Length: 205
Ligand SMILES: [Zn+2]
Image (spheres, helix red, strand yellow):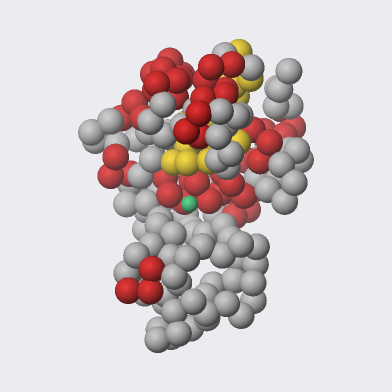
């Protein structure tokens, strides 16, 4: 049985609030649901029928409600994923799909070695708020659309300190994952200072 302890869920919220300090966004847990459904737990993936059914059944709130789903990614197209998120621009066409799906063992204290500090949620929520990867578009793209982020060709593994994958562009690659949310970039979805209200949906087989 895989149930998140309340203390582990609160630890995840605490990580989010620490990581998003200075952005004008904060996270106050509003609700937790725990659902037993091995199909949803195992087969969640961006376009799988199981995740569509899961979100249709569990999603609550509006565009400023963060629905966070914790799943297993054990089979199908999502096998091995750490997480994925919808972008704000997706909301209008498909509001039921809105949200962030993360690997259950990526929560603080989880069993996913090297990825169990809650930073998968931090990273994916960045996408949910409208942030792109710094390597978006490679050396010739606009990256994360934040002017002072150096161009980067590809994702880094770990935290290399002197990686420079775009030698014709200024600056070394940024040093660490996940994407630190920038206070300079206002989320496209939300006016600043609107509180996001996470609903955590814990799935278990
Ligand atoms: Zn990402």
